[in-house]
Image 1 (spheres, helix red, strand yellow):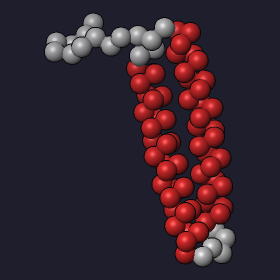
Image 2 (image 1 turned 135 degrees about the vertical axis):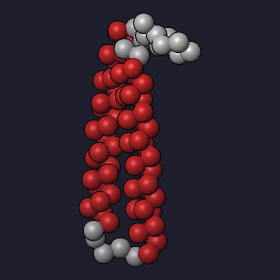
Image 3 (image 1 turned 180 degrees about the vertical axis):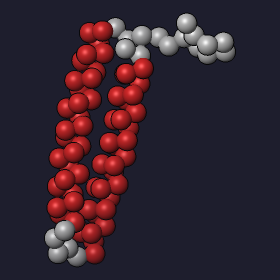
Length: 79
């Protein structure tokens, strides 16, 4: 039962939820690969411009991982 003042949580159709969870999982795997490659690249002897690019990649993949975690949380709460 919903608490007073709280909107009831709408549910996602099970088939759609399953597909979205699988896509979020696959996206997590791809993001993790990019994060690991970025880390390894950052360990090499890079010039300053290349270090900035690696930093940009690292920052963007962290943002993507955070967004993916939020998507997975929404799926959990609406399934």
